[in-house]
Image (cartoon, rainbow, N blue to C red):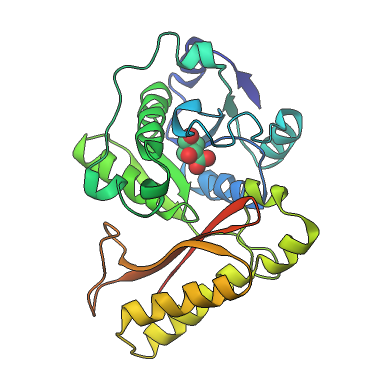
Length: 274
Ligand code: PAF
């Protein structure tokens, strides 16, 4: 695997490389990221990954400074997963001047769910992903479904801004007890870690109820919020939405159930498609 710190070096290496499959990350890689890389191998001639902790998508009181940075370990994992090129710029390479030209997702897509509690987050994500797409120029790019709203925003950005890139959403990888893998799980205390699978369990109950034909969406959402609160969580939302744009679902829509909740100081998100 070749590590590129500059745009020029990456571009020179990718000239004539064939079909490029690209998986952007912020590092601190776990089995979920590695499964993206493995799927990327079957989708392209050459797999490119990036590691860049993107300040633009963190709020002023969020965890940019303490976001775990484990570069050497990440490199070993990526190399073992068959990644040919890693783009790992520093901030001066990607943002040599303040990024005044940015990608603003539609209000209806960014102002809801995660965007409602993380103001500006999806503008930061869309902006850096647009830059990375222009730098790497992949034919296909892979994103985890764990960040379902991020995947939805990127799909819509690619469609509306005519990026010639196929976007592939990859299934969430879970620990044996059901907890969705996330770099932020490392913030959990042992007691919180033992409690954390409840988020996926409550989502699972809502999915089961929907599959059984229940259509009282608000009651189902409230039931899950109540169950989490009763076990010490502070839920932000449990929401039954249609998959395509995450607006409130109607009976018959392809649906996804999404949740965000704080456990101690750690905010966890998860979702399950119905
Ligand atoms: O999902 C992530 O790790 C980040 O949001 C991404 C897509 C790499 C953009 O910084």
